[in-house]
Image (cartoon, one colour):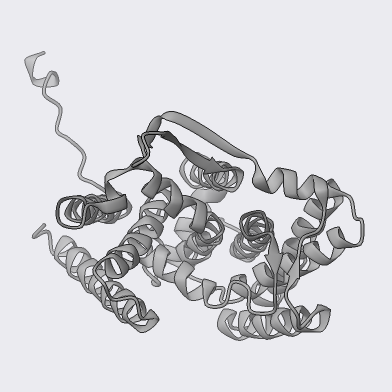
Length: 342
């Protein structure tokens, strides 16, 4: 009976291990910023600002995480986000209904997910080619809608955009002695709801297990009776839907749209997913890791700026170096784990 008291702990899965590494590195980086840079890093509002500015990126990163777990790729998400922003702002400026504008955003995202998912899953066209075509198409449509920046001029939408959740006890006292409460935008709440929903799908639902099985070994997934074509289609459908949601959250944050909105977002989303522990090989990944991957990517950029390197290329160089570091780290950890040395 005494032998049952001390049960042997199960080893961490690859997904849990890579996620744990990402969380630890993020905490170390942020602690470094607090100790050596101080400034805004001392206040909770810094974290909230990073979330406010990157809520839309977090949402599309969740979509990329699903696709990458299944062994695919989607580079159209940034362009779809841009198209949603421009379409919705033009619709609202013509006296459109707020609720209908949200449906428009979801409809555009779903349309891209349906078409791209069908071409990739049922016609067996390479994901990179299909989503590259989708990216060009979405960027072209955005430019056709308007080449000039468009600011949202809709009273109800602007009231929604300006709504923020205040948390006084996490605020700070300004130099003039006034208490500045911490503020979170509604888009952050939407992003966390998306993270929670995708986490439940991946962790507890059969569809989530099918994503992992398909990305780990497609042949084995077929032998287990998994409908691989339908599963792959669902991954791109979810990615398209999340791109639509991301576009509306992006518009709620900026209140305006132009042809260059969300430029490079797809690359940042892929980087956030990889840093969060979702390698391009598939079969491994977690949206909680993606959340911390997004925060890690944002934190390193903030550190670079706070260190006095304000030129944009320094952020790109640092992001590239960070991405290479995480890819190398993941490869070393997984290879040693495979040899039972970790």
